[in-house]
Length: 415
Length: 120
Image (cartoon, rainbow over all chains, first blue to last red; front, side):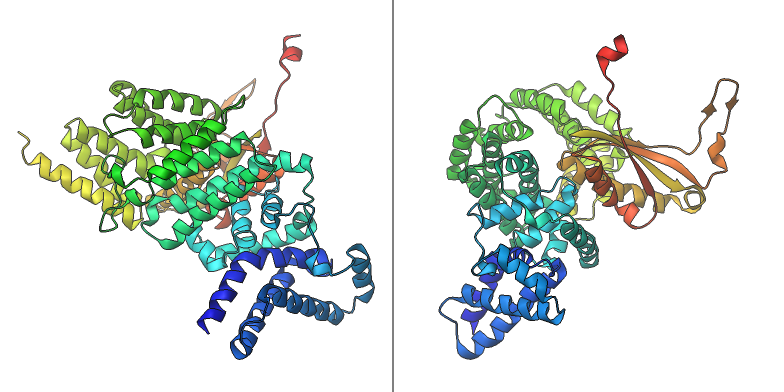
């Protein structure tokens, strides 16, 4: 029975989105919600039948067949025979198993989700739902949204997917090329959601990073991938190499300075440098700069021995193509460690006066760390205490609490 | 990518009534949203605005502006980069305070002026 569940789970992960897009191609009478219900029904039917009679020889084919029959029944119910025949004329043979012009169905679906009219958040949600095949509960958890919120978003977007025929994406070279930036962004965001330290150690997050890496690799291996894809892949690999090192033995968050560099995965770092090398070309994207910065960190022997000067230069370039206060914050931190203390503090205090940014916990945490390093325990204490009120993540709160205690212990020896 | 300005509009009467805690809670929600927009490369800047101000025309300066009587007022602005107007609008729609019906946003494409024509 466990074997049956495992097989069904795996098929769900690999086939949910594909079955839905096949159904949508199968008939215009099936809307997205109905298609999802039909696929869901087929999976429950499969579980019941397989638990009773054992696994069929080809479980995937079994599912497709059951799903097709359910779809045919559904269409008969709505008595729209004529349109059914039109569809059969368009797709001769077995329509549910129609062959796509490009063989990687997952990649085609990914490009379909990269519709330029959708916001990045919506693109990520539908990619997680129809390409990565995650359930709504998991998506809500990952994106820090409520299940209700995801459902509402999906209701709105399903209509749009139908109206604009978003899943009928034709993978022609021109369209693929114009969408590849958006696809990169989606993959970057998915990887980052998995990488965010605010969640602490959670298995689902590591899986998400893996999905991001696997899809980027698939893109790279296809004919569509370009040098920007290589840079993005290198960036992901650099970060993945530090995945385990970011948490201590008790699952507590460690910052770059505290991490045991021996725990970083050297193979992944090597692979990352290989891809960073491959990404060299005329065009330099934000991923190139970010990967190069990550590469400097990964190859530094220690925190102190890091080439902060090079990092500040890379951040200056990044700010030119992606100007925003979040990048500025990182730039300021790099400036501080490269020895340009006054310039760094000037930027941080400027950010502090901006009403939006003054509520950003990482700004206060950074100021706290810098004042602690400068031996100004009073200001360090103030900024860490402020930070505690600005984040609700237990992992981050724990991290700041630890720093605060360190300041208090050290300040006992203050004159 | 094209540039857009999001004008944040809020109900003046509601703004007057909410306490400081509620106000800062709103700002923190906005902050989180802005953080995700920064990650996706869409956010380039923005600030909240006070609801006081001056309204200027050739003949007179009205010190408290005409908007004091209005129901809605512009309480902030955000600069975005987006693929097109549709995407900019759907980004605005993902703002948590818009979802909670605490604010509405006006999405305006920023005009690019032809420099050679301006000089001519």
